[in-house]
Image (cartoon, rainbow, N blue to C red; front, side, top):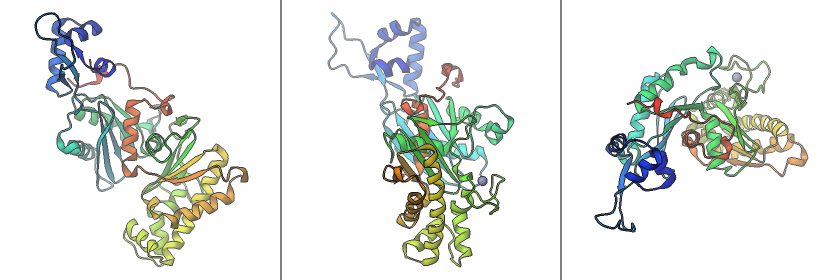
Length: 381
Ligand SMILES: [Zn+2]
């Protein structure tokens, strides 16, 4: 019913009946349910032609104030949510930080509370078609035991809360998708996205499609080795880019250089004030990022590189060294053809990517799995 109203605009009950082929009783029951949930409202009948005698048939339309798709990004230490209405306009976004070890039940509860705050708490979820969810780490086809990990319970928890299907993907890849649709690389066909945050990761748009990789492992740029035999990494390796260019990696280097900063904003403030130790640490990490980007550019040939995450806020102190090393290491012929940009969507990029995944309207998702057809079976009664 929602699909018919989405495709055809306002329809009368009779027209809906003709198009869906349901019995009058069933049709009226479903419509009553949709109206009660706020998904469907009656439309004004200003320009409708009168039907011979009596009053014109009342038409039904999607409620413009109802949410249609929600994106949730379960980042390491924060939950970000965003929602679009039935016209696919973004109606709002919200974020809240939490401790890194917060259990999934509590994260889902936090997400529900944040969704409740969107549009001042007036967002109706009756027309919700699905939720697109970003999570940290690799997300692939459910082939091996290790793919499920701690995430097994998450879709189930979300279905219980929201009563709609849930699509899950890596949150950094979703951020790459959002930046390539609405953000710094909008319209780009070959985009390399790198996120410098608590973790380091990325995403690739190759030939107009978001690249997922055979096991959902595309975009793990943070685990490219930059210092063989270097500091141990969470992935089990050593000397990965993440150990030197993540927030923790940078804070460790800064403290080792005699600097004092409790968090990333203190480090960035010190760099902004021109403090040598802070600038030196950013310059070194920037050079390592630039070298990795150069190697990736030589392999993939993007036209746009987007850098997101909290560390992108360092500005020229980080982008200068990145650009210098990048230029020094890429093929001379591509030097002036690659545009290095800062992400524009901020920390809700992952949640927005989740929405893109649900709407599935971007050509970037042409090779991505669709929401299953048995969508209604997954709905809670
Ligand atoms: Zn690693």
